[in-house]
Image (spheres, rainbow, N blue to C red):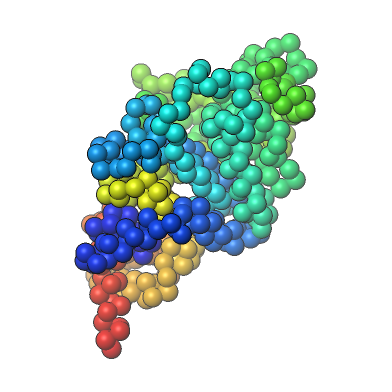
Length: 439
């Protein structure tokens, strides 16, 4: 499955015998998604040794309502709309901070809600301890990542507004672990009359710089260059009065960073970029604040991972599995395959000579070195410009196999091109292994 870069079983199987074998494997009582996840995080845990790692966490859902007629009742539960059935995934995507390149997973949590689970009001959700809430995943995933990636030199865990939880800030940071979380609400300050947002209004801007902002259809924002102004403030966030755990610290010391787009770069009819970030990292000047913002802008990688796992890539929601257990086992594998496609997409313009072994086996690299001669043209513009046996070099070959013409004047190959190229490559690799075996 990892070799063929797809989780659609009909594509994986060479015949009916293979198809039956795949179904039996994924539904086997001795196979569970936690074992698969443990294998994936263990591999990442070795790779991060001595590195500074940025860990991005977020949640997505996989919806199987259109397949509900063939699934056994009760094996999956309601997803975000509380009507359709499916399951949730909450991965922690590990990024090399210096290279800005995804390298694996610090943790992955998969779960489904009980079909008879009531709404928040019927369950008295607000009064429950954090450990009994779904939002505990932000904390438990961070704790699991700290264990799994303990060989890393330093870990910075990053998340969007849903992770703005007092207990996360109170429990997770230590001498080798920091947080960057986008603020969700205007929190009370321990030693100020003003709340957080009012306090930031009073702070002067400490600098400006220009960044490239990616398209965000959800926010109604097109890609463009944005001029950003930066404010910072050292703050003490007061423990919420309704917090169940009254043994928690009375306050947590953080740096708040407000990022506001200048009106001169805002596109007509679009909202300006405006982020308030809370971090445990040391921020004493403009460059340190700018570095925190740079790390936050890498959050797009986990959103891209989710898109690749769905219609832009491996298409997990089209799986024909007939059990919830099998679908969740498949989900763990699908995230790994999606991450490898994301690596190839990123590699095209990554200046670091990351080895191809991060995504390919040695026999596959040998085949790539044979195929590169087929796909290179006669002119310099059609030559593979990257160092041999690097992931960028491999990505160039796969993109050519996916239909890209090889000219740098063309748009950078995206996930769908890479997916098509991998599909073609893996069919060739099967034939290559058969020929090698006969010889």
